[in-house]
Every structure is written in structure tokens, then in C-alpha cells.
Length: 485
Ligand SMILES: [Zn+2]
Image 1 (cartoon, rainbow, N blue to C red):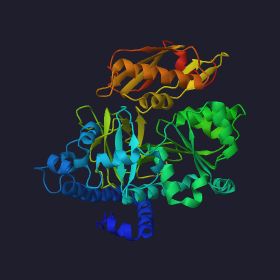
Image 2: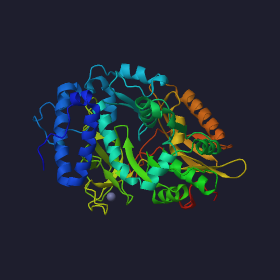
Image 3: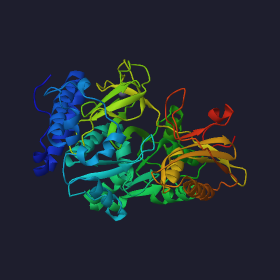
Image 4: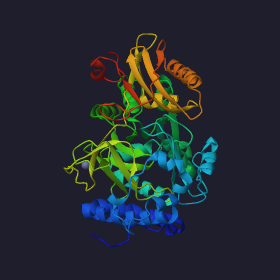
């Protein structure tokens, strides 16, 4: 245990960014080396700072925590949800310059992607697991922490991989579903702004691009690092097995969905590379990193995860939780304290063979199913859940949606219109956009059926899933993704 203050003050960070950043990176290393007690001490000290800051500068939390002691225990703080925080955005944030109106105006301009809002804050938008939009604002100290945590992961790179990355000019390809200010795109654009010399080596590829064109574009770019969703990179790895995709990156980084053992194997073998698995969210971009044994370790020195039941009582270790409460210990401008993230996680009671003191966890509930439809020439074409979600969610008037495949040529969709939006007109727009998206992928003749019910949690598991395969045949689970059955 140590009583040193582990949190550099933001003013010091502003004056000496490099020195503070080095200090953060060294501290993250030290926490990993010194073991669980050192991690717990950091958690406690940083929680005190975040709680005091939120209480002093966020009217929302000041009101919520009125009547609690000066230094409340974590369990005493009431859980909060995204809808209630978003509804009181201006009271939630701790800097009066950051209002929802000002931030929305900023993100509505795609040309400003990657710029810092008010020269201080990175702004990310996300639709999240439950399909409800949110806006996240991260301050410089938080961005420094996220960078420092990422740097501690360089151990996944072998000497050979580093040489290969240098040989490929450090080009980084990010394959994403969304543009503008959405989380992953924002991070790429932010780095383009911060490191202008590297800007043209950082490229974004849309996962909505038909596969043959995406493969050709990646072959031409020849990235050293390839970043994307596991389902998308799994499909790309199958293209590599077929000899179409010829890139051999030094490192593959996956996040946004669950990485299955099968996808990991296929990607590692087909692309001849190591994988860094990332559990990320707009609320905290590096919640957990995968180790060399393929297990996720939470960065518990900077983020607190509490697996809980539906009534927010704690879920015991080794059992899948209903949801998880997340507390971001790095970001002060938008305090996230015991926030219902919506993911089901399982924290392991056993430690990992890699020796990391950070808790081992598994994540479920982020994953939609990959859907498969026949093309005109009889081949089966895979549709990624995140790609379909993007097409539907970006339709004006859609608040939430669910889509499920009921037959080889039938897709049913539920939509919840946004506020005043007309249901029939919104449905017509959704159907038109999904039709042209499927056509762009080479899929024709799929009947779109509107399910009049509103999007809902699964009555049995109580989990919300946006996209799933509801075809009544077990083979749908057994066949390999993207391969003709
Ligand atoms: Zn491990």
C-alpha cells in the first residue's frame, strides 16, 4: 500500500504534457508490477478525487449525492443510467463551456472530426449496446491515461513484429462501421491532428464497403496494424485464406464485440499475426486488454467495474452479470460514476497464468449474430451486425431498433420512432436504406418485414440484443461464418 497521490493534477498535465504522460505510463507499469494491493490503493485514491470533483462542479451529482458523507464508499453512491444523464447533460458536465447545444453543434460538422472542442476536449458519439445515442467528452488528462494504458500493451509485439511494422511504414488501417465523430473514427482523427506527420499513414476503411472492394483497398494500403471488429476481421481473414486478401500486418487489434476462440485462431493463422483484444466503450476506451493467454484483464487502476444483477446487487465471481456499473477514474469533465453500461460480464475468481494482477473478465452481450443471405449467384454473403445496425440507426427518425433473420430471404425489423417522427414514414426510409445496403453487398430478393412490436429485451435472458439470427436450424450456429453451407 502506498499513500502517495497517484493522480497528477490537471494543471500540471496542461503545463507539462510530456512529463505527465511519462509519469502516467510509468505508473501504469508500476501498478501492474506491484500487485493487487497497489491497484486497489490507486483505485481508492482516484475515486476520492473524482467524487470530490464531481460534487464540486457537477450540479447533477451534487444533488444526487446530497446527504452522503464527505468521502462516501463506492457502494453508497446510487447507480446512474445513460438516459437520465443525457437528459440532464448540462448539469452532468463539470465545465460550463461544455453544453449539449455547443457539443451537438461541434459534432454536426464532420469537418471538425479529430479537433479538440474548446481546445481541451475530445468528443465522441455512440449509439451503444441498447441503441440509445450518447455523447462522451474526455479531457486531456483522461486522453493521457488512455494513451498510457495502451502503451503498456506493447509487450504483445515481438521483435520481429516491430521490424515488420517499421518495414510497412507504421501504416494503420481502421475498419469501422461509422464515420464522423463516432468513437473509433474520432480516435483516428484525433491522432491525425496530434501527429500531422503520421496523418496519411492512418486510414479509415468503411466496413459497409462490399468485400471485394474492401479487400482491394487493404491490399493497396498494406497496413502494419489492422484495427476492427472481430466479426469484420474474421471475414477478412477468410478472404486471406482464399488468397484474396494479401496483407500480413504486424498486429491486429480487435474491439467492439466479443472475440471468439474460433475467430482468434482464424485471424492469427490467416494473417500470420498476433491479436490484441480490447474491451472498449465510449465511456472508457480501454476498459480491458487481452493478455497472451487470450484473457481480458480490466485496467482496474483507472476503471472500476462492478458486475451486478438487475436490482444492482453484486453478482458473485464466475457468474454472468445482468449488467455492469462502470466508474471512470480518469475523466473529470464528464464524471462517470457507477454508470449502468448494459454489458453482461463475468469476473473470474481465479488469477491468470500470465501473472497480471488485474482482474480477469469475460464480456457477453455486445455481440449480435452475423446474418447470412444468398447472393444472386448462389453464394452466401455475410452481413455484420454492426454494419446493419449503422444503416438502420443512421436513418432519420429512428430511436432504437432490432433486426432478426427469420428465413434465408426474410429479415424482420422493429423500430421505435424518435419523438415526433412518423412511424410509417420512418419505416419506409429504413426499408429503403436496408434494401440498398443489401444490394450494395450483392444480396437481392430479401423480404423486409416490419415487426410492429417495439424493441425489447429477450424475455428469458433479459438481455437486449440488436441483431440476431432467428432461423430455426442449429446448422446456423455450427457452420463457419461467411462460408457457403
Ligand atoms: Zn492473463
